[in-house]
Image 1 (spheres, rainbow, N blue to C red):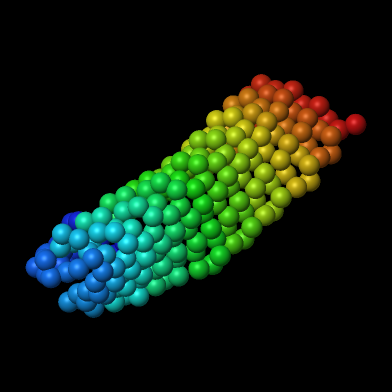
Image 2 (cartoon, rainbow, N blue to C red):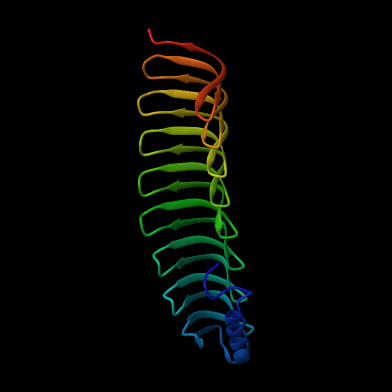
Length: 220
């Protein structure tokens, strides 16, 4: 939630009361300077911020977009003083729906949001070159998705709380391939591994290692 617009924040309630006090003195377009140094320029209706407007807080945070009863609601862009920027959908003061967020280091996420965090389908590109496309839940890869690491490793399959979990296929930069079960980010269950040198293992795995029944075919 953007600083200064939290319903549970006494400061926000004070600002709302200040705006309501102005009441009918406000026209459709107004500039309001609040006691804490925040400045709002835009539409005001019924004694509250409603419609299109720009808010600049004393912290340096800036929001430009749609408002409903003093909260970001609709489509808008916020630029935080720390360099993070979000542009997209808002509901009652939180990021909700589709939007794009960028970080000062150059990382970027575009996709679904719920309650201020990445959720649903989305694409994340980190500054080191890693990329993930797929489902998210509570800011983590969760569900079906594909991760491409800058090292050349690629995984496509199911994720749980940011780790490979379930069924999936991973390939390595040297051409090795594993298809099968995963748990907590490592091969687990039944799977098939093809190494670049021609060796093949089909069978059971645990914590990333062959464990249990299986067949190993050595390289020619």
